[in-house]
Length: 439
Ligand code: GUN
Ligand code: ZN
Image 1 (spheres, rainbow, N blue to C red):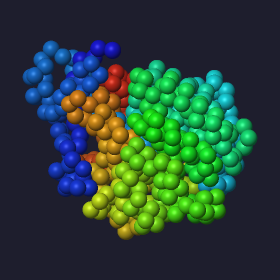
Image 2: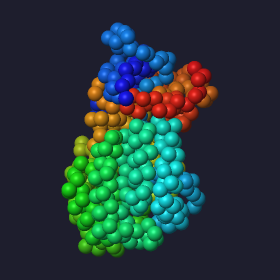
Image 3: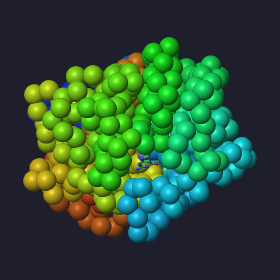
Image 4: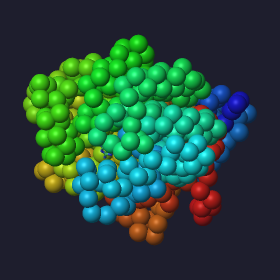
């Protein structure tokens, strides 16, 4: 679709990694800023006066003092689990058995999966998430439904069929061969079609035999620009189980390394109980970690060590993720708030500019999409959100006392929810508008 549009407001973009340079040096913030969108891409970002002068005939949408920034990127989520969000009382392995697997078994039905995809993607838009790396279920149908629904909305999304050939209900398992064949067919149908990226998705080591992990590794070698996503070292009982199931492996990371499932484009969810060897091996492989703080607290898994994984000489690639529905919220504000609180419990304060970076550029980097999405910069795809910085009376009151953009971002992280997302653009098209026209 042809677009030529200027959005005016406050703009926030990243110039550098705030873990490597001071927060102020890492961002560009214009209080009177603008973003010029042309044919779905960002043509220019900067001071509104410069942009309007350069493009005097282009239509302007004036968002006043609202914040214009890149859409959030969620690098680990399970759309089929949204119906069971907020399920009480269990930790990982029981939670999977009692709530998750029964929910996922309904996705053999295409219509059910299409309706659930639409609901999930609408929630993403309301929460300003424009891209996510998503687990479907074992059923190919669930991937078709998801990509079809995402494509209708013009969204850049990654998704994959879950591979599980053991330790799961019979109606949710495949085999090493059928899992390979179905994934291959889905890659041929969807990978790099429109804005879709295929993610090879072995659920985690306990639900895949060695043959299945071997087949997943082979497929990834054959299609190296797909994503490979799985879970790692989330829960102590899970880790003990992996040791029993793969006694010859060095450790949990060693299982994935052995089958060729580590490397750039691999996204490991959680990674909260790693040994020094595992941390080093993961970093040296170029794999990324999806930090899922709302899930790690909600299902009682543990506290991610942001300081040692990111605040160091050789940092890991880290993105932020909702992990719905182990995660208890669709809001990236909640995820950033939880990341801050978890870091506090480990004696480290996660700066708001760093949290925001992880929720956008960091997650895009984990997905190897940071040259396309996750930031406002010339040439990037125009996936953009408009944030009302005074979306509740309490936030409005807090804004009366802020001094810097850091304070503004921090107050949003701690206090905001989906009411703050005023509008969402995908590839330059307005696809969600909250209707709160109360400037
Ligand atoms: N480990 C294996 N499967 C899952 C899942 O669906 N959610 C979470 N949080 N952890 C997992
Ligand atoms: Zn997960």
